[in-house]
Amino acid sequence: MNWIILRTKTDKLRYSIISTIVAFILGLYFYTIPFAAEHIYFFISAPIATFFPSLFLWKWKFKTTKNYKIGNVLSVALILTLITHYLNFVVIGIGRILCYYLTGKCTDYTGQTESLLGTLTYISWFRMLISLYNFGFLTFVIVSSVGIYVMKTSNLLHNKSQLESNQ
Image (cartoon, rainbow, N blue to C red):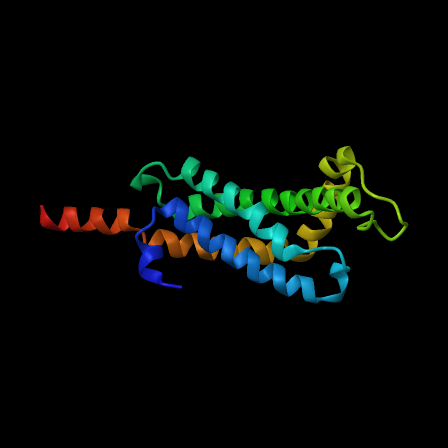
């Protein structure tokens, strides 16, 4: 990947793209480990669940260069950790429902399919809590690291410091 192209994007887009790439890589890893079962495609659902929330949270929290603080990055990381874990299981549940209606496969271990209401409510919340217990801190650290990287390499902050030094 050409990092110069990524550097010319806005900070919110850079944060979203890097977070999505990391989510895809982690999704591939979690797909290969035994507890992930055979129909849980984390490498598909994790990037989908990460891109838009990270884009909107960065846009919402970082409106001016005064907002570029570590505390704001950590708050975005905390909120994003919760949202992405939940949305990840919602996307997986909806994918299973679609797969069941299109192919007749993709059921759980009892041979049943999930309901849409269950996917949007208690099933995804329960899975999210288990996921947060096991991997929440790891997700928080990775998302925070991506945010700190984007903040430190921000063109807005770099241009602002050049303007201040020229005056």
